[in-house]
Length: 459
Image (tube, rainbow, N blue to C red; front, side):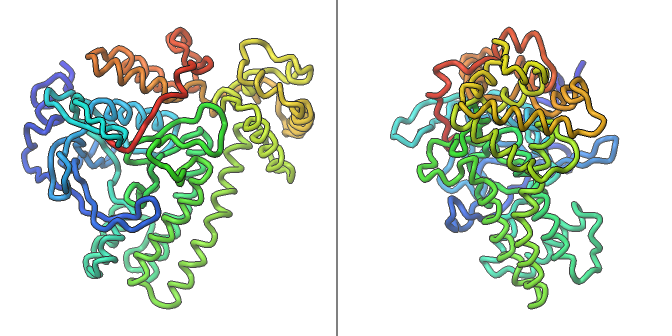
């Protein structure tokens, strides 16, 4: 019998039973939400129930989301609904298999309890099915974990927590080094730049990039109104409650800088004057770090090897063509991976490459193709087959599009988890063509109703 079928496991992941020696905790943190300081927040519906260490020595913090009220629930009921829980379960697993640092979902349990939600903040309160997700991560500490202590003047506790985080999660930093906080900040800056570049490389918009949702370990956490972009659009906003479009996909790098600046403000009380100057210089390097990683990733997506001063222009040129033609982000890069150079050269785009056909409608597409093919010729020791193999290994054929997540969630609300299971299988191999995924239409043009899907912070 699988451990997931055992009564003890069911009792654990539903919060009905506390493991021997476990003391459930709720984490206190603050945060800047949509650009403004929101004060004390904290885990309002999540309990840390322990740390699991696997046979390889890797430790994972176990957290139940939707497990009831905590001291930080404020006016909330501490519950989560099935609809958003399905999205988080599938979304975090999809990101993991895309190779992007993320929390993961170990289980999803449906509750018999009714949960009342105004999903779109329009006064339309509805009864929804409750659920509990067992989430795991290396750490759940976020920028807001340090902000709240700095804002409340609890500097001894701030120093103690920061030393714990460094000692536990940044083993390369010497705890006896007087500049350890600088070294920590430098790591967080560079890794956050890398994480957001990775998000952009797969068309992922987090949706709520508040400082209380930004991990100090630069992993993707707190899946709410996230979304994978269909048509390429720098203004894509998955969160319908983000009226000012602050967290649009094209602004994520800027928001990352804003959040890191708030982290620096939290660290400042612990830094000497010279260290503060150095920390500001470290933060000033963030834009260059981000664009360097962004360029590396998109060069790889285009199969480019070596360095060429025109590579940034080639990338920007294609993205502009995609924006103008509203071409599908995921499939444009995937189809560029699969199409032959000869087919591109003749501008003969086969029918199955529907996304590329959209881009090809642009009057400047042929000009871009000429530049692209010339650049591919400069790849040292390369061939068309090698290029294709490289590109198909990093350009996914399947991502968790909003319409797919919505379809699975709606069926789950009717107690039909068939599509949840299907997507779970498909998303484990996003770079491989799969017959069951093709039959489900997961690599086809999104259905017309997809553009009407609404996702908000309420869950």
